[in-house]
Length: 438
Image (cartoon, rainbow, N blue to C red; front, side):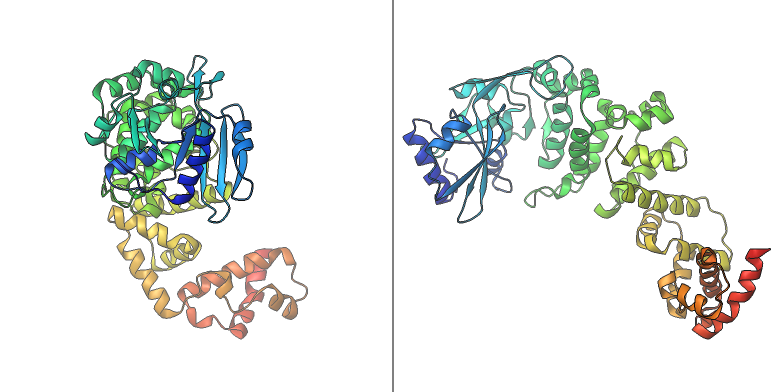
């Protein structure tokens, strides 16, 4: 087998060979090449340590950056193209109990078999000698790739005990590549899911979000159900309580576990990528019959969950609150419907997107369309006056009341858009001020 490799990488391999260290491509690039596509970065490895690589690289063509000296990881960049390769030194690892992800002891070695044994899955432990075009495969990774199977290199008991996060990585790879998971590997993963307890939230976030968008990972793989299959698998393994510890603490572990054997995914299965996070929370809240309160939303999406920033968490809270208000089925009057739309205008596309998935909100959408036709101002920016106008005409009105006055004027325009004129709005200011001061 011969991979399509650029000349810069071949030149790099020749430099390594002069130092008696064949350079190998390992991991995803080799695996994907066997599948017929190369949509991933190239990771390389050899027996050379970072300080030894620094000595052999000609400074004119390459730059070297040490990423993790303990793990022997460096980045080698080709100056002319900017292409970068991550190089790791062959190593053997030991892990403390608990599946904490980082090895407690690292020992650099000179041979591939020991390096291969510390990897996770056979499909990721295939090496390619750049200069000899030779495949090195100690765990039948080539066969597993051809059969579309995820299987651990060593026993799954050993592999998952070293790093509990590999349980989620297994699900992610299965979803992204449209691979099945070896039955024994899957069974052991389920029995050892508590290994996830010691994993940091940052690690969870990366794997879980990748599963949520697994169908978009590779253009060459058409698997539109990848993400729903991945999320269901996370549930079947019993992993949600570890991925969302704050949410589990709020609602109780038994309620979270009730999701494991249930087919609660409904809206998520029909959601476009931009709505998947919102739809996932909708499905959980609907199944558990709970409201998406601020605490719930922040527990799922904040630092104890997917790790979105505060601004995005608030945004999702507003979207979900509005959607659930619509989903209650309460009848909005025409006036209240228009004001509701104004209040949620910044999130209208997401709210109506969720409504479309759920098959609700048709009347509100019609009202929204009519408001656009009528020229209704949807937010304060579209109102024809501002605080400066109020100050100029009514200098005695306290500044801290401007926002309330403008908000009331905006709502008045919801049903009477024709008054959205500076002169007419200023006429209403005095009466609104009197009401506020009562």
